[in-house]
Image 1 (cartoon, rainbow, N blue to C red):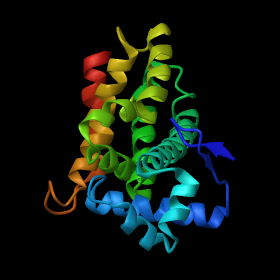
Image 2: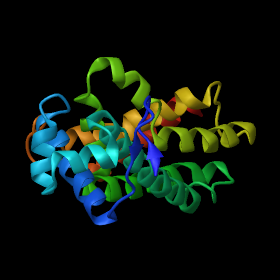
Image 3: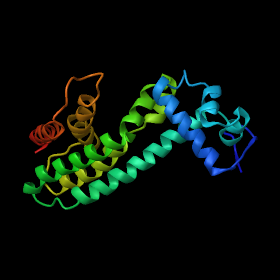
Amino acid sequence: MTLEHGTDRPLRDGDPRKRAAILAAARKLFAEVGYEAAGTDAIAAEADVSKRTMYDYFGGKAAIFATIVADLRRSLHEEVEATAKRRLAPITEPRHLEPGLRRFAQDLADSTLKSSNYATLHRLLAGHPGGALADLHGGQPAERILAGYLAEFGAAGLLTVPNAAVAADHFVALTMLLALNKSNPWFSEGSPDIPAILREGVRAFLRAYR
C-alpha cells in the first residue's frame, strides 16, 4: 500500500486491471472534455468501477491526472531516447547533420502522430487549470534529450549552440510542433505534406545554428 498525497490514508494497490481501467477512462475523458469537466462520477462510470474503488486506488482526480501525465512522459521519453540514439548518435561530421536531423524528426513524427501520445499529452496539459499547468509541464522529452545531443554537436564544432535548451526548443518548434499543428483538423485544411514541413524546418534550424 501507499499513502494518499498529503494524508495518512492508505491507498490500495488492488487489481491492476481495475487500476488500468480507471486510468484509461480518465485519460479518455480528460482528452475529450478537459480536466475540469471530467467529473469523478463520470470517470468511475466509464471505468465500470465504484467511485469508492477509484478513490481507494488513487485518492482523487488530481492524482489520476498526474499518473496519466507521468505515464505518457515516460513512454515518450523512451521513444525519443531510442530514436535519438538511432538517428543522432551517428552524426560525427557536418555532412551528417541535415540528413540525420531530418531522419530524427521524421521518425518522431511517424511514431508520435500515429500513436497520438504526444498530441494527447499536449491536449491534457493545455486543458488543465493554469495553476497546475506550470508544475506539470516542466519540459518535454524531445527537447530534453535533443538538447544533450545539440550540446555535443556544439562542443564538436558541428554547430554554434550558445544555449542547448533554447536550440532544442527551436528545433522542435520548427519541426515537430509545426507538423503537429498542421495535422490538426482544427487548425489546417487538407492533407499536410509532413516530410516537406520537416525538411524545411531542419533547413531553417541549420541556417540559424551553423
